[in-house]
Length: 360
Image (cartoon, rainbow, N blue to C red; front, top):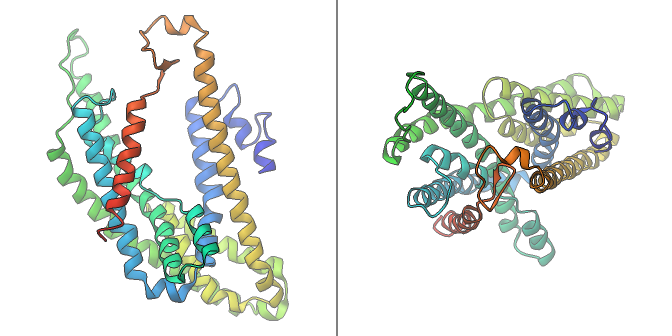
């Protein structure tokens, strides 16, 4: 965290991200790489490593139903609600159904940290805790898979719109570009999603288990239990775990699923090939890395939010930038605050969460 936040001279990750010379492309790339490759893997690996395996696999089908089926219900309900509101003019934004699916996949993931803390302190049955913990871990990974699928569909849709706009560059009155209706979008989107999920989920799981077994064989073959070099042992475990994440990402699979199951496999096999000192240190080290990454992500999101608000507030005092375009009252510096969208999205999210919990 100190490394990320102290690099404000433009030479470190966050320094280059907020440098005066950084453009939008560099900003987007820096944020994505820092979170996706630097901060997310420790959190996912630690979640798999500390998972109570017996209870998780005993209820694996139930957890998958909630994490896959429940997430799909939430995404589709949120997307359908948002699209209906957009078509009927209840919100100012004009969304296509594909964009609504993308938005639904972003907010479908759950973060039950407060819920799990309450369950742990209130003495509820362990089964309920294990179901919520397992569902939340796989729910995040599945939401990211859906997001990548729908982002690809949105990119294809946007390219088609740009191509339609440039059919005749000399036409001073080009025809309006209309979004396809939802009934033309849903079948190909669902077909594309089904094919990608049937490819991504099993292969990611197999890759994670395979890398975990490789790490177990390596630690056993090298005789690390007798050498008692805890720093080398834990370094091998972490590097091997990141290998599964990197390979899955390069192969267009789910690095999160792969890393999660690699952590479960390593805890079941490789952990017992480590020395006593490494076993005693592993839990604390992985929990510390996970907590630091969680804090760093919260700080980045907090800084981004206040930077967005401050940027919009300061742009109110720059009339030269606002003269070229008519600004609505609720708009700051070209960045619109659609409070109707915020309110309706919150209601749709709550209803979607209820639908993906109680019926299942």
